[in-house]
Length: 237
Image (cartoon, rainbow, N blue to C red; front, top):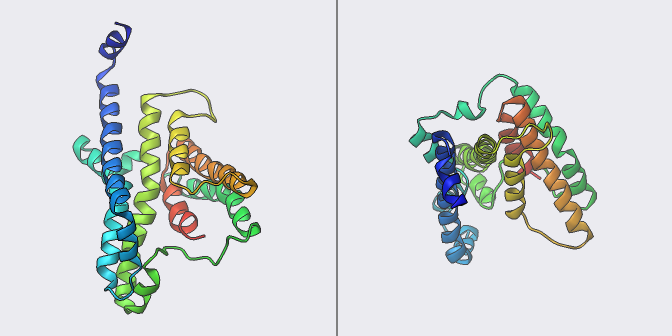
């Protein structure tokens, strides 16, 4: 009876936010489930340099966008909300970017100190090497696609999810936020986890980077720091 009563007490806005989260979760899980089923075959396809780079790039981009991007896009379309309403604006953009960079410093230092750093390669994915061999036009267009999917949408996806959860479960604490916590944990779940000493340190600095980046987004009201971090740090080291 208490559960039924509580459900009836939800406001229209709270119900919309719950629906938004379900849309994002179901779309992402569906895309990830497809990848889980055919992942090994797709990985072989992506790595096969004998196949034209474009079908490999577009297929991998579609899968990535399905997991991190399609859900939030559908929510914005259904709710008639702009991306700007989730922090993509000029105000405090520089503060958000600088704050995100600071939060990623422990992760960067760890990558270098642990010998995992193999060169700085922003906007680089599995097919990038073959893309660069396809000519300057292909390189430019392909790099823009990579930046849009693996940089913009992946980073912005975390910002939107954190914002929706924060609106649904608001807290007054300056340094704690349910949306930030859930989004940061979600990011870690898609990150390789090892339980040796190096793995635990990696887990800690990764959490600091993601949680800090999203707290900065919350306090600045600007999501460009998340986008910048995923283009020039997360997918570059």
